[in-house]
Image (tube, rainbow, N blue to C red):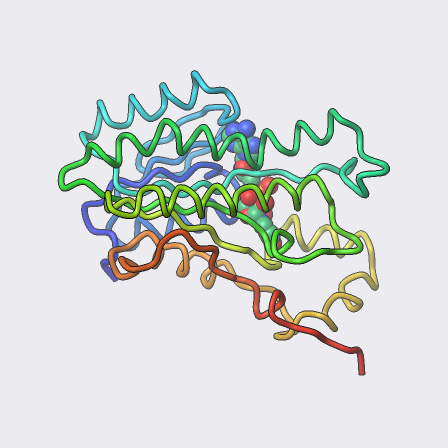
Length: 249
Ligand SMILES: NC(=O)c1ccc[n+]([C@@H]2O[C@H](COP(=O)([O-])OP(=O)(O)OC[C@H]3O[C@@H](n4cnc5c(N)ncnc54)[C@H](O)[C@@H]3O)[C@@H](O)[C@H]2O)c1
């Protein structure tokens, strides 16, 4: 496995289960990994603690990475959060809306704004940005956390615009539409609410969670030159959910 040999890769939101799995996968593919998170962590060859909603911290993080390691090739923007107060718009406070948008969308705006100039300056110029979105950005859902879904839809449009805008510069920008990936947090949600998983599984064509290996493998592919003709798109990583119309038997 050697998809990312000699590439310097920033994984933002690296302390999470998916972020850690992607950082590990990047390293196994030969990358030098910088793990960034607002929480204490030990992920990556070099670890950074930064609040990615704070513009000065984002800018300082990227400047420091390039000062130290001389180049930047890949940015994986994994950070995000869900908020229990984020339900129907009719019941959601403005503060919750802002918190959710800051963590899921503004952080990606800031990461692109301050990270991409370094991709453009790396010799030879180019690189790959992968932004984490959700299948909720692609469907209307009766039960969605609506601020989160709107923020992830914003990520998809930001990705599309940047991908097209930068297409001739050899910087590629893509998003992933995650479906349910098996993480301890996901499991805990369903453990707290027995029956909720069974109701949902009917609508998941594959009838299971995605694995961390499947998620990190797809992101490593999008980070690598093997995906060199893919840009400005949102890749479903959802076991077919966004394409499916399912009727309970
Ligand atoms: N797990 C799933 O099934 C699933 C489904 C759809 C989308 N996603 C998306 O995938 C990504 C990762 O999911 P996860 O389940 O591992 O989530 P998670 O909540 O475990 O991880 C998010 C990480 O981002 C970090 N983070 C949040 N705000 C930050 C900030 N301001 N600055 C720096 N770091 C910050 C957190 O500390 C955490 O380590 C998220 O964007 C999530 O929305 C996941």
